[in-house]
Image 1: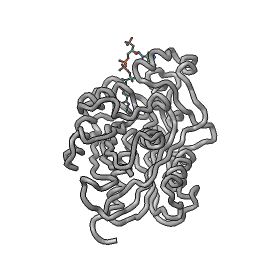
Image 2: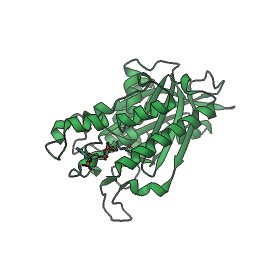
Image 3: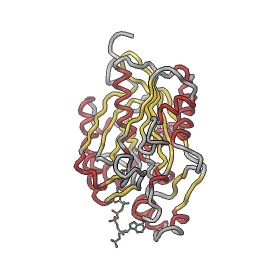
Length: 327
Ligand code: UT7
């Protein structure tokens, strides 16, 4: 292919493990209540992976659903990028195991680690590779089993997270006018490692030789999230030459309903234009943006031609946004 390219998103899919854990069930494990969790976060339930279900299984199920939605055979996929902070094993990359499970032996597969911003990072990196001509068809997946790194004695964190996966299929197409083209129109990524201690896992192969547990200073993360998300959304809009009022749907990382409300308010957008799924699956880290996207596409809210703003913020800190014209 010659000339400028654009990555069009031609399909999406998602997968949630069968087991649902309610807030009431959690209140039997730690000192908490359905009332506190709903009021402070908007979360009503989360899904938890089965003992023998790994991140690569969740990712593969989401990928299969996305390929079916796109009408693409797995053999056409030339690149698989998985965003995850909870890989099956320290190595190899989850993406290589998704590749194996899909029966693909050509092309490349690797993981991206940006915790809750992982999907935006993976989408941005894959978009750049597609536009550079490195792959004509690519799978971008966000998949997590955060239940495995939660301290189930710590009520300040264990009530907030869940397991799941979501995926999209990107296809290289000739770029035209950014005002009317479909696909990834712009993206921006940020990180600032000074905030490591606000949100981290207290273990790893090179520090403790264990997996460790998630630790978070929730209130501080909340404050930074609202600031950083509003700012990166502004940057992305600016880069693409659009305004907040042009956005049909915000498809945000689903951490806390109050973060979504505060960010929407800062952007001057009504909550009717924000996709909210945190009530159903809690914070699924890198999986939450594609889970929200798939929900709103499949229930008919997001229509071909709609302008979507995806955004996320996570451990590191990392944060980013991507502007996509759907369909
Ligand atoms: O995915 C990216 C990163 N993650 C986030 O974006 C999460 C960002 N942070 C948040 O969502 C919120 O800060 C939390 C939901 C984590 C906490 O909400 P908050 O309104 O900031 O509460 P808080 O941390 O200020 O705690 C308020 C009170 C405390 O009690 P005292 O000190 O006021 O007596 C906590 O001990 O709530 C208590 N608390 C709980 N009570 C019942 C904390 N967790 C719980 C709980 N159940 N699960």
